[in-house]
Length: 390
Image 1: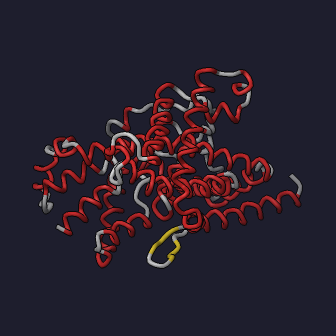
Image 2: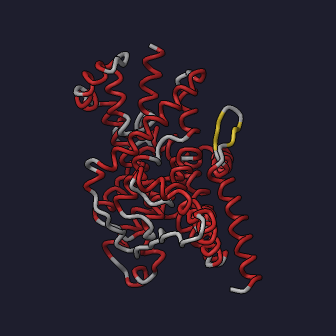
Image 3: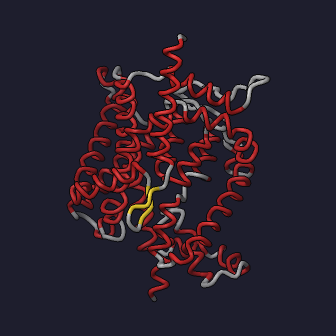
């Protein structure tokens, strides 16, 4: 590599590292909220598009279902030979069912046809009207700009610096430290996208991806602030967030070492080759210098802008056609169960004695909130707010 190319690679890494940190890792206060760079863009577009997003998402879910039926079952030669289309729509029977169900629920909600308990504002209406629009806009920008975070050396740099801490503590690769920082300081939603992409490209095993997703792609600062504001306990934010961080850290150390996470195999994604990036630091070389070297090497091998744009677009479509149907179908079903049945109350009974032992106030109600939280993270806050009001 000649000197001019080397210098260009150094600047490429530095510039895109600054952009990636600025867009994904730095919390930015905006009015009464805290968000990140891509969040500001997502909120702007969401406000601009307003009430048209549910209809747009419904159209996307129908395209996802119809396209998946055609490609997965009919398997026309032209589509099967097109890698881009095949990757988007060729799915297993289980995922096909979820995509079809998501499209059906969206149609029922948008036109308010069929049973009201599906399109009610507390069930499917809540998912399509409140949750999905946020994910739609967030993933638009997170997917487009994700290559800035993953393709220009930032993950190699942090991965080399922190792997001696991350691997023994959390049994995860050093590069997952970027996922963790994104999730805790920026957005858990973006963290999920990073984790999924790294798994599908062969950087994480299935076990490692599960460990990262279940322990780190959860409660960001922005989400925590939203919760305390919703519950009107902003004056206790410091105590609240310290509790979240301590509990999250302890769980992240323990849960990878016990079932069910410990049962998962270190098996790589079937369509990806294993990519080993944690080669040992050479003798007489500092960890920082070696991390910087690996980052610059990665930046020097970055594909063209056109390839990056194509990859970003595929990220967005992959999420829109793959994840949004799952959110629509599973989210609606979970809210229907929570709103119209006693299942969560029954399941919560074993938690009541434990919460009483921990001297948690209103242990029976808190137990329900604990169980409901498995369906949707925001539901416990909604239940808690209802208890405060009552």
